[in-house]
Each structure stands twice: as structure tokens, then as C-alpha cells.
Image 1 (cartoon, rainbow, N blue to C red):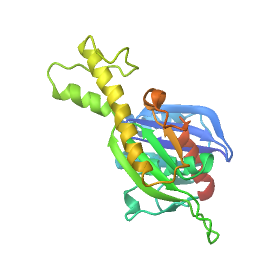
Image 2: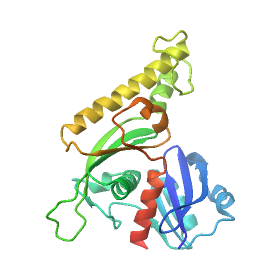
Image 3: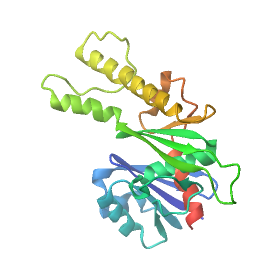
Length: 252
């Protein structure tokens, strides 16, 4: 079975092919604002798949994707999907599909308890509790909830938009803490400050969790921000896609 995986986020929509056991080599990206029947036809015209699964946090684009892919079996991920973990959350319909995919990928690939950080338009921290040793035969690891904070690019772009003299900056490792130009000062504030934000949130989450947990990072800004964060256990750039693959195998 060839599975088309679709990760429809606010900024970019990623497409990948997978078998039941692994991600395959083909992947492509369309900027989310450009999603249309025409752009999908161009991106997928030479691609063969049997079933597809969509993780979307952009409802109007999800409708376009589902309509385009609907000629073959297509599953849109939600809290109602078959998952290898339980959901322990008062309003499960509020959980983003990408967060569920990350939680499943981290639990299956790295074990629980764990925290997943996804560095995207927002940075999300998702907590998965460990299996209950007295389980009744059903999956007992459970999604507990987490934290949402502004993403690094969102913070820096917002600063540039709201001030007359501060420029847009290219995110990279700062050369020094004491900036010698406006750009250097903004870069140091963004990267060092963001690492501090991540450390403080993790410190508080750990107060409510067992000591022996895994901390997994994914998303576009993860390689930069986690470079000096000893708290991280795993860097998994393809975690969302792997989670979608695992979920697809349970739903087809």
C-alpha cells in the first residue's frame, strides 16, 4: 500500500509518500496560501498512491485537499481517528491534527512518557503519559495536553511589522550576545531569548511529569533552537509525517 501523507500547516503544506513500514524518498512542499486544484494537480500529476491521510490546521485548505484527493480513499485526521494512544483532554476536538500526529509518532518511535516540541508558526509542547501497567488490553498511553507559544519567526516578524525602524532578519546562530548592529541585537534577542522561553516551559512541565521522560523536537526552527538545549533527547525532522504514516496504517 502506497500512502500519500499530507501535512497542511499554516505556512507550508508538505506531501510525502510512505509504505506501511517507512517513509519513501519522494517529498514536495507547496506554500499553504497557494493550495488550489491547479497547484495540487501540478505537484501530484506523476505520483501514484493508493490511500491518503490529511493532517490540517487550515480548514478552508483542508476542504480543497479532501476534494482533490477524494477519488481514492482519504482519511482526515482528528481525535475520532483510530490512534495507538488514548486522549485524556476535556475538549479533544480542540487538539490540532498535527499535534496528534506528533504525539503518535513520538510515542511509537521513542516511547512514553514524552514531550514533543514542534517549532513552526507556533511552538507547541505536547505531553504523552506512559502506559498504565495495569492496562485492560487497550492502548493506555495517553495524550494529556500541553503548551502553545508564538513561533520564533512569528515573534521576529511581528516586531518588524509593529516598529518603524526595526528590520526583518534572517534567523541564524548569533555571532555574539552583544549586538553591534540592529540586526545582530535582534538576532541575539530572538535566538537566546527563545531558548530561554523553551527551557522555562520545559522546566515547569517537568515538575508535573516523571523524571525519565523523552523530549523530542521537530519543525523548521528545531535545528537552530535546540542546538544549545541539553534538555532535548531527540531531533526528529520527519516526526509529523511518521506519525501520519502510523495513523494511516490503523485507519485503512
